[in-house]
Length: 250
Image 1 (cartoon, rainbow, N blue to C red):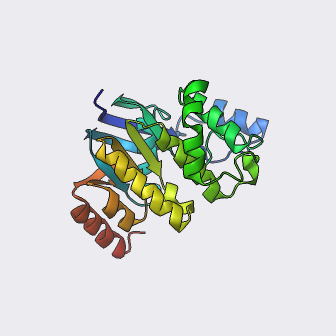
Image 2 (image 1 turned 90 degrees about the vertical axis):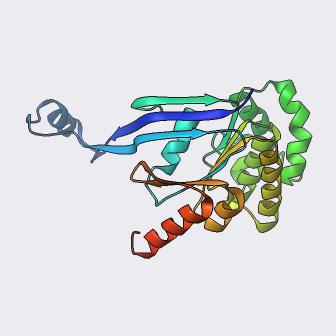
Image 3 (image 1 turned 135 degrees about the horizontal axis):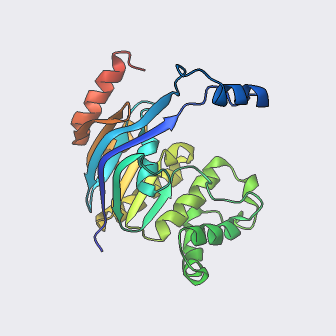
């Protein structure tokens, strides 16, 4: 099956809650006795986004903090439903949106491999077939039977990345996953991603590391205020974004 992603006129709107520590009396007054003039406040995390991503594309998503980059990834993964519009995804997704997401801290690394495998739809036998490969690639042989609550952030990343890429997904989604990695493992992970890309899978990554985006992406999407501000070849988009940031738009 050819993997593809189509996003059509998608909006994601969140209600802004100004005070999460209201007393019961304050909550009642705010929500039931407020005056008609009082209005709820909302934030548009995705604002009329339309995109099409096809097999073989390596997409780098850049933008300022809070621009909507991670929201876009969550839309693709089905974690965050759109308020309006449509998201259509064809293909098996492996995502690393948050280090250790889905890991149970009291479980060992090995136990978490099976837990995460089940979460993404793999049977116990399927995980067993790739278990040794995952452990070897992660270089966590000495720690694989230690509860992951004792793992460093780099160890989390190594285990999660090794599992996500061992299942040979059609679509690999990464959100700042290399921020916690040691230099040697990051280089090995880059080589593995190049291998996956050569098999015409889709790679979508969010990163503030422009050098990494230049290296891995063949198209860059700049998200600004929940919108696609610019999309195109890495050099032109990154140069435009870098100039934008250098002009004091922090």
